[in-house]
Image 1 (cartoon, one colour):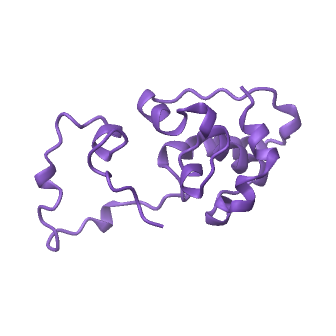
Image 2 (cartoon, one colour; image 1 turned 30 degrees about the vertical axis):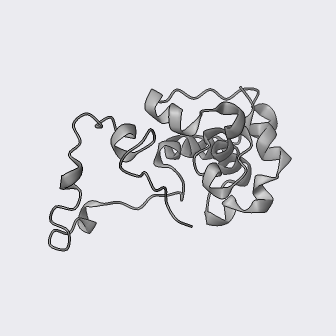
Length: 143
């Protein structure tokens, strides 16, 4: 799987999604390449999906730990940053039932649903079989 070609520029680029598109200086991206190493300043993502969805997936898994079942949940409402919402919630019709693993990585309703229903979110969660699961699609539509 390869990443997006417009990672630095474009509507969903790093610069835009982090609110720095006006201040970004693209020439600085490769500055110090091979000389300055930043690996000690990074952290590991707990889930192999868009980082904007991590807190919401965590919330769903906490509900499970408190003994709340899917049947008890009538509605799910998430308050998130507008920039994040544009990436992981829009257009909502396609986010409810992503067609690809890559699309699922950026679908908050689907990620919350599978994280809650399976109490896990791993690379294998993004399987073609799981993308077709009705229980995930229906649970993700609770609004």
